[in-house]
Length: 342
Image (tube, rainbow, N blue to C red; front, top):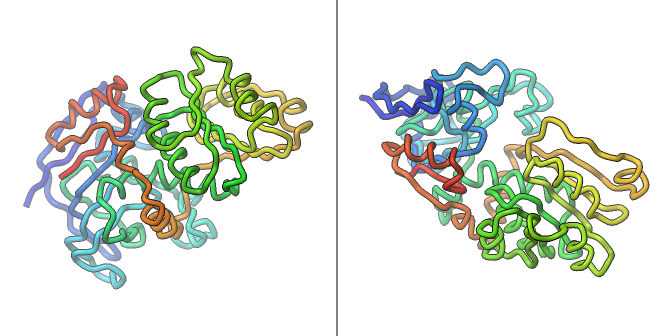
């Protein structure tokens, strides 16, 4: 039996190949895909490189945000069975170290990423270790589940670590899928949310997701606007999802004394002023990347209980056969969150 799968030979080329449906081995399950979301990090593979060192390009099916139905179980699998609806945790680890046992598989010294180091979800079927499967609530759509494996999960975990609540005014910089997810979660937690971006259409989406205030950084002085909105007090917390050095500095500058700041947008280098921005305000700064696997039950329960409109983050859906158009449009930023659906 064969299936269709996406491969990136490099230089923005997309191939849809007919390959054999894989067979689950010891401790593995076979998943028939129902949704697989495209992420900005996929673009590195699309261009012929990888965000992860040592990952070979062109030989692995991409897609690290998948959800589907288990259609086969390998030897030794007892906790899952055919028909179970699951999403897939992207990090593969040794399973024995302290990081793996704590659920933070991405910190394992043997970390590998689904969709980069092993075949991902941009195919009709995929095989993964059963321990990477995360059960879905019956009421949750596969599209919501796929998007929740990265953007929603990452922003939930960050705000949980920041103790965001109804007492807080939170500024979120960058209204792509990560920032949009952050708005939804912050509103679910009761915070007052200020959304910052350079594009009006992204800010309009932020409003639709619940943002209380929006600031276009091209048209307004961001820090002055935040100061005005907070009556001169400054924000309680800020999250940067853009990775832009100006936004990262604005995040540090806009919070009050004892404020909290999280960096989520990838950034190789930024110049900051520790005395002025950190020490004299005694703020807490953290980096946040993904979430521990056992937290997914809590994340999905929060989405369902708060009725978060996760699918509003998705501007386009595609069939797998439309992969060339899907990745070209995503690369050209003609879509926000895009998802393959079956």
